Length: 356
Image (cartoon, rainbow, N blue to C red):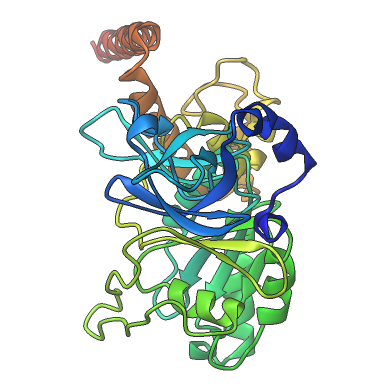
């Protein structure tokens, strides 16, 4: 039974010490108010998480975790430990606090659902991609409600825009209404664990139902006034797919804050990082420096200015988040601000001297 949820020899070896203590192996399929549902070889059990609820929000039990749960007999039953995670999908819980929030654990594919019912928000897609790459999962962008863009040429242009925004990432246009593209998506998620993420109204619950082959998740229509969805899904649920693999459906995300996602940002903007290798100065900020290969690419049209602005924005945001918990980085940022301030002041003074 556990094999259907991703149990393998590596997990079994990691669990061996807990098995020797008489504990049961299981995977968390849902967490709710200090308790969780755990699928085990004996079936799904309800367990308390009091023993695995540390102060660090990134170390709490999460949907997708493999855990050691007490055998039948105790009331309540407790989760005693969880196995080291292979991957973890994490975002910033709030821009006002230096805390991360783990959304899903041990994920192989991050399926980013984006609705074609409205205008594409490429910057938001880049944010989701940065988090997905940082998690260690392979991102996949799924453009839902493709039937609302009946013109094939227009749809192809939209797919191309997203492919440019997501280098190295599969981009699929699907329609749950017409069944378009769903066979390809089903093949992608049939191996391993996939997490389905996106904003409310992106069609995640509809997509989950189609992949599951039954109406498991409630579905509500998006508001006509602004196209936004209602939070149909309120918890993160792990479900076994009939064609193999498991799917974690998540509530719609209002905020997509980065959390220590520097390498993820770099992977999203891999073309910029590759260009930066050709800059004259190794610490080039790509603003006005001579010999900047990135600025040259913008001048020639090889790089979109929107991409560079988005790259800068995400790097700054991620740096602020990391600096909240890293005193040395905060000092380095202040030093850089002073350096840039001094350069700007010197430039202004030189300009005034020339004007005189």
